[in-house]
Image 1 (tube, rainbow over the protein chains, first blue to last red):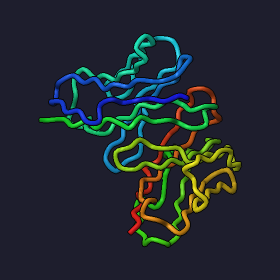
Image 2 (image 1 turned 120 degrees about the vertical axis):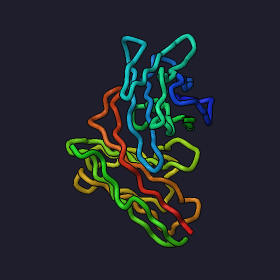
Image 3 (image 1 turned 90 degrees about the horizontal axis):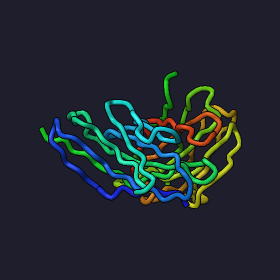
Length: 113
Length: 115
């Protein structure tokens, strides 16, 4: 069944440093993949999604993600992190029949001043 | 487009009481989803509606849970005889008719605490 795994529970980076959050997927065909961000006490906001074409996807807030079939990965990146990026980040893949979204356990990002 | 809204944002109740949450999706979105999120976890699918029809329920949705979407617009999620294990964030999302890769737009959630 389609699923995603986020290996890192918590990551701390300094403001201005680059960021990479890992996501590995399990799916036979080319998956549709999503990254969402959740600020404390808030719902989820879509950052970007991939479903075909260019494997480098640009999103909002300066984020990008790269789909790598050979590594079954869809890692999220940002060249320079801002303090406001501190949040929980979730990778997701549609379930069977596109009736639900299956999320990873999330990676909590802390940004040091 | 005001986005998905949920009410109340927070609810504290005593074990054994019934609670009801409301979700207003983005207008013209045909699909509405409910998820549950516990601390340190990603959201888990509970159920979804296409217009007013409830088309799928997950195994997480016990008999104490019921969801409705009577006119194909807003939806309610009721939990009867609440238990402490029901404490979680309940998230609602909506989307247009599902095509592959269709984006689900999430509301702010209702945080439930059962004492």
